[in-house]
Image (cartoon, rainbow, N blue to C red; front, side):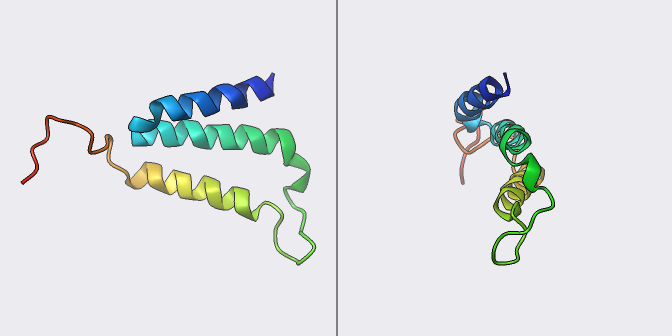
Length: 84
């Protein structure tokens, strides 16, 4: 069932991509579901070179959350905003 949630999340993130915050939140939720499905046993594990095994996933989630907090509500595709 969670695999279908990830699949639908990928589709929604693509469709809602023109809205930066909504698309990023959808993608971040999708990433969290994928972590819960596949990487739950690696939450406190270290890799072979001594780094946290979840470093790439944590970097992706944190960068998406920072984009949500700093991005404009819409992208520049709006036609009602006049450029100077």
